[in-house]
Amino acid sequence: MKNTRILMIALGLLLPLTVAAQETLDELFNQVQRAVDAEARVDQQRLQQFRQERARQQQLLQEARAELRAQEQRSDRLNTAFDDNERQLAELSTTLDERMGNLGELFGVVRQVAGDIRAALDDSMVSAQYPGRSELYEDLAERRDTELPSATELRQMWAGMVQEIAESGKVVEFTADVNNADGQREQGKRVVRVGVFNAVSDGQFLQWDSKMGLLQELPRQPAGRFRAMARDLQGAAPGSVEEMAVDFTRGNILAQVVRAPDLRERMRQGGTVGMIIIVIGAFGLLFSIWKGIMLFLRGNAIKRQIGKTGANKNNALGRVL
Image (cartoon, rainbow, N blue to C red; front, side):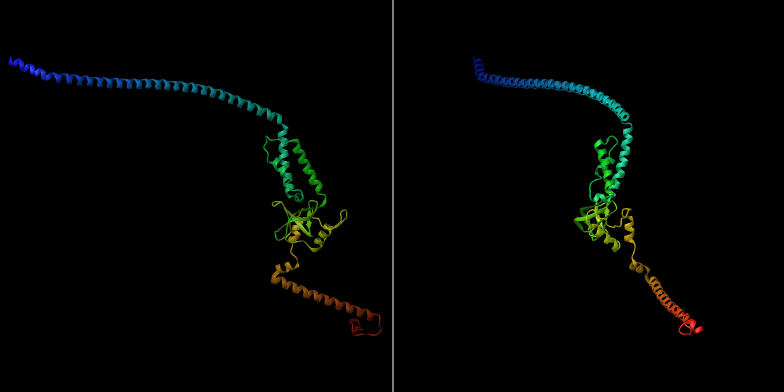
């Protein structure tokens, strides 16, 4: 009886503990279950996202392969078109060469003639009056074989040649810029051009500088009589006839004349020896003049003696008689 009472008391004390423990385990189980469910949902979302990403990558791969096939096909078409164009271009080039025939040779002659004419016009004094005439010829001379000249350009080239021939026989007056002997440019100077040979301004002879494209006054002028001709020519009335020295070598003779030293320069070039020679020559000349005068006087005295009967000792014949 006593033992039974003790057992009942112990069971009464353990009953609350058992109930509390049972509630704690259920809650723990519920928490674990919720955590497992949450993890399962996350894993399911990740799996679904991975499958979606994989499907998208697969689609992109298919699109890239399709684009690659399209580009390869386009490349094949372009290569085929390029080869066809190359063959067509070769055929057209052959046809062009066949049809050009003599035109190619003609254009070679045109280029050569254009180069010669350009050089002649650049050196011509007429270019001082008509600047820029050689641009057409320069363009024609530097063209490639495939750039044929037009009929208009050929006519212009012919017209330029005729103009040069016509201007070579004219004496004209025009205004142009001139570099004076000091190197200063004077604008709007009155210039008289004698064909393609000479040009004068204010009585001074000019030369054509093709590199500068400008008329330049000669640093040293020819003799005064030539400058007087230049002044008379520039002041002459239209239609009148004037005497003028013309250099038909287009400046070469004039350059030689200008460079030729005068008497004073020749004396300086001779130095001391030259001065001694000049003094001896002058003394010999004076002596010759004196002897000539003496012989003339004595000859007259002899002639007078011949006509007289009496001897006169003032001459050689009179002294002999």
